[in-house]
Length: 400
Image (spheres, rainbow, N blue to C red):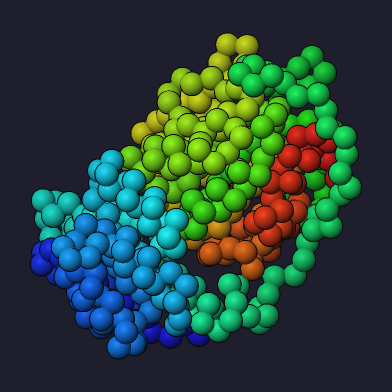
C-alpha cells in the first residue's frame, strides 16, 4: 500500500507556494512537510529527512532548480522531483535539462489570473496524480528496484520470445514520400467496432508503412533510448505523441534530433510523411495521419482533449487504424493512465504489430499495462530492446 507522500514545495514566489500548497494538502495521501524559497534552503531541508517528493521551480535566487537536481543526482535516500516550470521557450529548455538530470515529470505554472478556485482545481488535476505516481516510484527505488514487487505481477504474453534477425529489405531513400497503399495491398478498411478475442487476430503479411509511438511520464528519457537506437536507413516515417505542454515538444524534438540518426521535428499541419523522419505532435494539439496526394501527411487540430490528453495517443492511433491499418507497427512506452489502449485495440483488429514496454523498465507502468493484461501487445520488452523490435518489424513485415 502506498504510504503518505511527503512533499516539499521549492518555489521563490509566495503566491505560487500558496497555490501549490492549497492544491496538494487536501489530498489524504499527501502531506506537505514544508517549503523552501531557494535551492540551498531546499537541500538543507532535504538533509533533515522525511521528504519523498519536491515540486521544483527552476529559476530561484541563491540556487536554481537545475543545481538542486545536480546535487541530488545519485544521492540516497532517493527522492523525486516534479518541475513546475514557466510556459516559455527558456523554461522549456531548462525543463528538458531537468528531465535529463532525473526529474520525474513537469507541469507548467498555473495562470493566477484565471481565478484562484479555477487555478487550484486545474493544478490539482495535473499535480496530484503526478505526486502520487512519483511517491510510488520513489518507494520502489528505496525498496531496491525500479519496478513493483512480484505480488500481482503481470504474466508473460505471446511475443516475448524475440524472433531471429532477418536480412534487411532494401531501404527507401530518406525524404521519399510514403505510399499508404499499393496495388498488392488495398487501402485498409475502417476499424472494427468489436474487440477481437485474445490471440485470434490475423497479422498483416506485408511490411509496415508507418511507425507510431506513445508515451507520457518518463517518456522523454524513454524516447531518447529508443529513437537513438533506430537505424538511419529506417524505411518508414515515425509519428510520436508525448504528453507535454506547448513549446516543450519543440525543445524535446530539437534535443532528440541531436542524438538520433533520423531527423526529429515537431510536426506542422500539412507536413508530408517521409521515410527517415520522426514527427512529434505539438504540445497542446492533437495530431492525426491522413491521405495527402499520393502519400500521407499529418493534420494538427484543436479538437477537444481525449481522456484529459491533448495531444492524445488514441487520437493519432485511431487515425492510423483507418489509413494504414495492419501496415502499422506501434509501441506504447512508460506513462500514467491508459491513453493509447483504445487506439491499440483498433490497430490490433487490423493486424498491426503492437509493442509494450515492460513493467520493470517503466517509470510508470500505466499506459503499457492494459496492453499486457488484455493481450493486445504482441511483444512486451525492456526499453533497451524496443528499437531492435521496431526495426525488425520494418524488415520482416508485420506477422507472427
